[in-house]
Length: 256
Image (cartoon, rainbow, N blue to C red):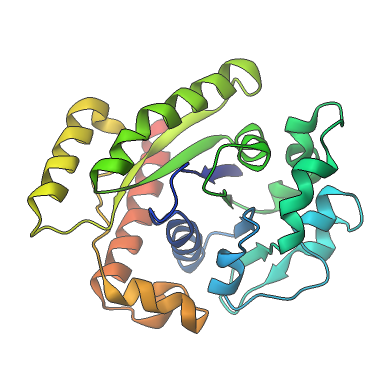
């Protein structure tokens, strides 16, 4: 069954794009057809898999200039596809300001085509506006990367409240897939405290897998590669593969 996951956090620098790219790549490496939609005008996800400067991209899909099949590009990884972004996406809010049903434009644009993929991962921008709303309306579930520091934790309540509002008003099927702790430093008492607080309050919605602070994760995008194709054995690569395995295990358990 095809599933759409929006990777979202209103705070920047929490590992959102890194998680989007590496979860999708890990799922593809495990044999699942995975589509990554770069829904951030900064287009970091596109650059992170060596896809950039394409004529047809997600903005042209939204405005009806391009068909779905023309904006989907194969990556160098088997089973892994991407709809790239461009700076034009930043204008989408103004472009559709007076459009009826503007919150569902992405949902309508991808429609039945996402059934071609086992998993579609949407990399949302680091803010809650038109683009993030469209991603949440189109999605079945939300995955929240949470950096292990105080300010990131402080914004979590607001984010969860926004997800609840979208579910109530626009998308009744939307669920919280889970929270992924990122940039975790096991030597830091603050990281351990944040982890304890989140697990105590949100319990089973927090993934057991924790993404460590790892320089290789930071280096990989500059080479246009997901971490497992940059350094397979580094702690960051191992962690994202474990995250994908845990994600699939949870999917299986929830379907029983």
